[in-house]
Image (cartoon, rainbow, N blue to C red; front, top):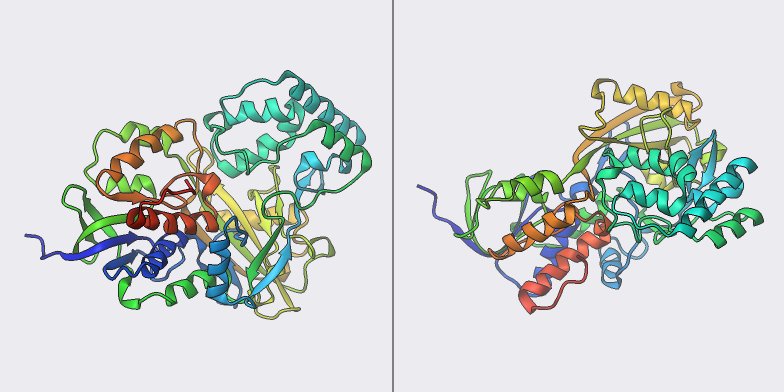
Amino acid sequence: MDPDPARVEFVVLGAGPCGLGAARRLEHHGADHWLLLEAEPHPGGLASSFVDDQGFTWDIGGHVQFSHYEHFDEAMDEFLGPDGWNELRRESWIWFDGRFVPYPLQNNLHRLDADVRDRFLADLEAAAAQDRSSVTFLDWLRNTFGVSLSAAFLEPYNAKVWAHPLDELGISWVDERVAIADPAEIRARALNGEDDVAWGPNATFRFPKQGGTGAIWAACAALLPAERISLGERAVAIDLAGHRCTTSLGRVIEYGSLISTIPLDSLVGLTDLDGHSDIIERGLKHSSSNIVGLGMVGQPPAALREKCWMYFPGDECPFYRATVFSNYAEANVPRPGETWSLMLEVAESPHRPVDHDHLVDDVIAGAVAVKLVTDPSTIISTWKHRAAYGYPTPSLDRDEALRQLIPALEVHDVFSRGRFGMWRYEVSNQDHSFMQGVEVVDRIILGTPEATL
C-alpha cells in the first residue's frame, strides 16, 4: 500500500532557471502550498557552476547573461545586486582557413582571400536571386547562403554543434539564431573592409563577478523558503489521473498542478500516457554536451585577450566552441593575472560518438592545433563534465511531437516548460527558461496567456 500522500497545490520538478522562476513566481503570488524537487544536491540545472581542485571555476558550457525581458533583468539584479556583474562586449570569432575571422562569417568576408570572398559572394547572390523554398535545415543553408559558403563553414560547423544530420533538422527555429544574409549589405561590407564582430541579440552581455553562472541560481534559491525546496529528490512516477507524484525518497505527493522542467521524453516516461512512443522517437532528438576545462599558468596569448568565444568548424579539433573563460571574470581563476582558463565544448550523439577515455587528451591536442594553447606544459588543471541532455534538436518532427505531447499532459494539469521541457532551442536561453516558469504560473493562477513558447 502506498504511504499516505502529502498534499500541495503545486509541484515543480527541477531547480534550473525555469523551475526557480516558477517557484519564485509562486511566492510572489502568495501561494502557500508548493514544493520544488531537484534531483541534484544543488540548484542550477544546466546553469550550475563548479570549482575544481585547483580553484578554477567552470560552467556547463559558455553561458552568458543577456535578456529579452525587463522582469528577468530586475530579477538578476535582485539575485546578485547591480554591482555583482561584469559588463562585457561580445567578440566571437571563427577559426577558418588557419586564421580567426569575426563571426558571422558572411558579414566578414573581407577577411578572406579575394578569390574565396568573391566565390562566396557570387554564390550567395545567386541563391538569393532564386528564392527557393526549404524544408530541411541543410536545404535552408544552401538556399540562403549559397553552396560554397555553406559547404565551407555552415555545414561542417552545424554538423559539429548539432551532432545530427542537417537534413533531419527543420527550420522553424532559425530566425534569431542564424544571421540572415542580405546580399547587398554583405557585398558592401566585404568591399569596404568593415568588421562586424558583435552581431546578434547578445552583442553585449554580463557575467557574475564571482561564482560563475551557478551563483545566480544559488542566490535565487536562497531567497526562497528552504522548507519548500527538496534537493537530492526526484520524481520516479506520475499518476496523471490521480494527480500523484511518487519520489525517489518514497514520498507520494498529491498535487493540483505539476510544473515539470525535466526533459519532456523523460517526463512522459514517468507517466501512463500511451500512444506517443513513435513521435517521441522521431521528434524529441537531442545531443549531449561534453565540457572540458583547461586551467593554465601565465596569461592568454595576445590574440585571445579580447575574445569571448570562438567557433571551430574543422576536423583538426573535436570541439565546436571554445570560451576564454578567464576573460569573463577574474574570479574564474585561482590567481588572477597569473592563471587563465579555456572552456571547450564537444557535442555527442549516436551520429557523433565521443571517445571519453581520450577526450581530454584529444581536446588538448585540438587546442594546440588551432593555436589556442601554445605550450601544453602550462596546463595545471583539467576538468570535464558530461551533460546527457545538452541541446534539444529542432528535428523535422519536433513541432508535431510538441503539438501532441504538451496538450496531452496539460489535460491532466501537468505543464512541461524550460529548455528540455518545451524542447525549443530557439527559446531555451536562461532568460527564456526563467520567464517560461514565470508565465506558466501566471497562466495557471491568473489565466493570462504565455508569451515565451
